Image (cartoon, rainbow, N blue to C red):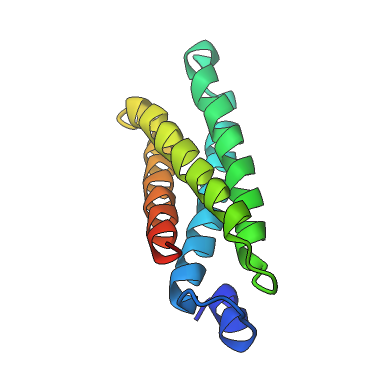
Length: 133
């Protein structure tokens, strides 16, 4: 059981299933880490000019995932008017970053891993959005 799920099981005020929240938080944290590592690997690439869009999207995605995970983790005063736009933004940047990483995935294994993390996070955000409707 993840730390997120353990804490949500103990102290939660939201009506959303703790396992759905935990899976989403884990996907966001994993995506942020994968995007940060991918951007770093891209910076070390011999053809950096062709990777600039990927680096920028990865860094943006990591920041959005981190911020959204922090807000989703705060369940004491659940505010749908704040959470929904963040989840929508997180899903959108993950989709865009995943698309960009897909372009490089055949040549760069780190981009494939990042693409997978982005797709997983996008799906988790959409699942949580549906659960909070």
